[in-house]
Length: 414
Image (cartoon, rainbow, N blue to C red; front, side, top):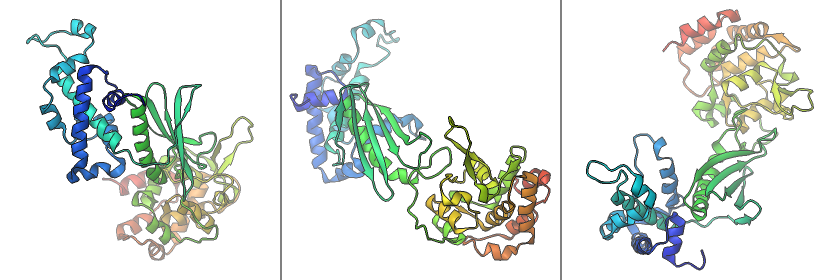
């Protein structure tokens, strides 16, 4: 677009025809945008990655609660009021075939109102003028790959390390992906966002804005299979986090507590049979050359898979560590998760016996450990208030796995 004047560039950016009337509207939009950007009252337009955020939001407006209309850009009322030929502008967007075939309304008007289309065109021009003007400086060096007519860019992140990848295809669709060494078994890239745009340049602007969000959000996003953080938190290999440390560091929804365990046991009752001990591995690969995936083998592994607690990888120290050891707690710390002291007590006892044991035997060992434990001492490890009703719930855990579902239903009714 280097040989085009600003109005033509704006029309191309917004995906609108470069006809004389539209070009005049684009010039008006640029003038209004210049006034808006010079007004200190609108300095916030540059925040959060610029006005591109509003264009991205408009693409998802149907998914936003209690909102069904795009947000009009500042200066919109002035632009519409100062444009005398709004209806004619809208007519430019109606192809001759549509003018002929659209069913007239009782008022002899077309189903799509040219006046409304003209207003939309003006707002689009102003939106994209503000988006281009508030484009932030970034690390993006776009390269064009002629083989597939695709534009690509990427930028690394640090502490922890990862890569944000941007792609704009010939159909004006952009893709923002997060690449992380955490994503294994051929899934090294996680799709963060994809959306269509009116032009390749517009797709670039939206992709860059989405990448700003991805660069921050990727640190709090979990992959789907094992619920591990895409970018685990750095942790020393000699750190010895306590249960208290883990609970304080984790978000409340990532603390797996005893009520979660009770529900998980009821759910897993007829879904698992024999499991191995922690020392033999929570997740193991099958001896099948064509299958690179690892699968659950321990009770903790099943809790990982079915209850959303981050799983271990076979080559990690935590994979053969009991849940009450520093090695496993380092794994939990790296993924921003915690087990409460009652869950820790149950799983540690349940997985102590080596070899394959059936679910009933492992459950009995875990339940017996809770029944004989000093619950007051365990509750002291939890920095959150521990109500007496929870202690009674823990103390009443049945030794018979077949009684788990009824016990859970009685104690956890709404």
